[in-house]
Structure formats: C-alpha cells, structure tokens
Length: 271
Length: 265
Figure (tube, rainbow over the protein chains, first blue to last red):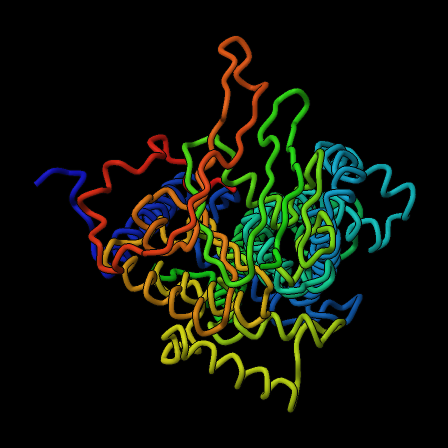
C-alpha cells in the first residue's frame, strides 16, 4: 500500500497524536533527571515534584499581604482583562464589520482607515496607551482591543461582502429593505465567521495580554511569570505556561462547540 | 393585447462598449418567453435590466405602464442557477421570508398569529412544489433540484408580476430537469404567471416557451466588435410546443452557447 493511502481511523489518530506529546514529556523528564544528577539544586529544568511543591503554596495558601490565593487571583485578573477585551472586540467587529460588508458606501468611506489601523503593530502602540490611559486596567484591555479588532472587522466585512450576489438580489425581490437584508440575510451568515475569527484571535489576544501584564501590572498570569523570572523560578513558570495553554485550549473548544450547536447549517452539511 | 412589460428603444452601454442596442419588445401578460443566444449576446444583461440591477443607458422599460426603478423590487421575482436560497434558514422560513419582509419592518420576522398564517401559506406553496416533507431541513441540506424547487416557491409566494429565470435548470441532471420542466409549466398555468427565462438549451427554450427570443448582434465591425450591441434578432411566437418528454440527450451537442457562461449574472 502506498504511504499516501495510509489513513488512520479516529482511534488510532488520537493515539498517534498523543505519541509526540508523551515523547516530549519523557524527554523532559530524562533531561531534568540528568541535570539534577549533576547538580542537585538545578533550577533550569525542575522535576515534577519540585513544580508541585512550588505551586502548592500559590494554589492553597493565601498571600499574607493581599489575603488572596495568588494563583487564582492571577487567573481571575487575566481572564477578566481578556474577557473584557475580547468582548469589546467581538461586539465592535460585528457592528462595524456588518456595516462595512453590507453598505458599499460605508466600505468606501471607512475601509481604508480600518486597513491602515490593521497594519500598525499593536505592541508599538502600547507606550501611547500607557500614556493616554495610565498604567491601570484600561490600557491592557485597550491593547487587546486595538490589536485584534481591525483583523476581525476585516474578516467579517470581507465575508459579508463575499456573500453570493444572487442571495442579496433574491432578498430584494422578496421585498427586503436594507435593514431586513442585514438582519435576516447577512447577520446570521456572519455569525459563524465571527466566531471562527474570534478563535483565530485568541492566540494574539493572549500575546497582547501577557505583554501588557509583563510591563505594568501587579497581578495576572503574565505578571507572575515575568516576576518570578528574576528568581529563575522555572518551577512556577512552567506550570503557569501549561495553565495558560490549557485555558486557551478550553476557550477554543468552547467557541467551536458554540458555533456547532448554534449554527448547525454552517458545519459539515451534505450537499 | 396590452403589454405587461415593454421595452422602448432600450440601450445598455458601458463606456464605448455597447452591450444591447435598440431593444424594442412588448411582452404580453401570461406569456412564457424563452431567451436564447450565444455567450456575450447580452442575455444576462437583458435579464439584469428587467430585474433592475442595472438601468438602461438609453430608452425606457415599462412594467404595467410605469417606468422601472433601477432597483430590485417585489414586483419581479427571480430564480438564479445557484445561490438563490438562504442556506441558513429552514425550507419553511425561506418561503416565509417574503411575508416577514412585507409585514415586520423592524424585527424582520413575524410572531404569533401572523406568523402562523404565513407558515400555513408557505406550507401550501411548498406542497405545490413537492417539498412538503422537508419543511424543517436547512436549505443548505437540500440537493440542487430541491433547492431550485425551493427558490421557485420562495419567489412565487411574493406574487411577482414577472418571474425571471436565469438558467434555472442548467446545473441539474437531465432526469431532474424534466421534472422541473413539468413543475414550472404547471405553476405557470395555475398561477397565471408571466415568465422570462434565459437558457442555454434550445430544446428547453422551445419546450417551455410560448415565445422564443434569440439575442445576437445584428452587425459586427471587425475592427471594433464592441461598438455594436446585441438585440432580439429572432422573435418567434410558438403556437405548438415540443412535447414535454422530448429527449435532451440527442440535441445536447447543439446548444448554441459553446463557451458556457453558467453562473454569470
């Protein structure tokens, strides 16, 4: 049988997918054990036992200064900023994207502006945001919003503008006004695209969040990682990074499920 | 007989390119007009003019004696070759769409008793096109033939004065096309429709039409072929139709449109 025709079934595909991950973990364990054999107080590749011990304090004991459990306080602060930022992005992308996609005149007026904003590297704007909004929460949320919204607007607008012309004509011959056309034809078909745009934006959103937290913050997952870096605390950094990845995967999964449940027609329809 | 749709010296030009020239036609109510012609002879442009997607650069188009606004409206229904149903709505909601638009200006959808009435009307219309057992499927789940049935039902419920068909059966299998021919003729009679149908397929044109228009250029300037536009060069009133079961297969090689501009609108 040719190699190109070897197709794993679902179960073996899952198993195959797990193999490289397990290999990475095993390789880490060996490397960590080797370093500890040479130097018992090695900090660069901590053993799993050391990570558990280091995290135990952050997870279970309240911080004597703030009275909060640090790990959960970090998680809550980061998720709040991320949620707020993504929420604002999604709403404004939907609103502006729909207007740009449905109305050619709006597209001609604002399209160039959105495209221009989209090419500015958002991190380069971070100093401006700190100057304008101060070092508080607003600047961090604003970075996420500025970083992601232009992409999502363009994505939604392009998708709506690319709806088959026949559909729009048909709707008009059935008596639809511009408003009804937007509400009944364009909006429902933009929603799955909006969600997939949001899923694609999760990665950049985390980047902007952690950058903002690293530079000016007093709580948050990104803040903690950059704080303990000074003490070479890999036993805290590695679990935090794993936790961030887990959160990202969970969000992506939740959004995909939402799209599949809410917009059945957009997913794997037999023609 | 008074003309429902009249073309009064209609021209369509883009810059110095003439697409249609001197189109003078009167289309009677309840006629079934087939429009044939080679690629680039302006069949689709002609349909776009009637639809209101474009305005003629000269001349007037009159519907019921009133000049057409250059915008699509509910007095002209349309079925395209593809994409004329809403994939995200159920079959029933697709047909209710026209009622939603007419009566719910802000919400875009009806509620309560008005909605039930619209649903009943839509169900009756769907039964006529044979889709009464697929009411709650999404349009995206239907086969090509079923989508075209749905598109026809959707257009008819708005009671258009003219039904425009842009190669409606071009993408269907021959067997299904025969069924669709029967369906459209039955609906044409029962609903007293006036139909304009653009088609590639000459057999289809003669089988369905009461009148066949052939579009082509009358003159060609070899040095500037774009300077002469097309018009209806043949206008045949049919008294006797081809039988409905005339096979397509034997003549499929001589459809005039060799290049195939399917999907163009």
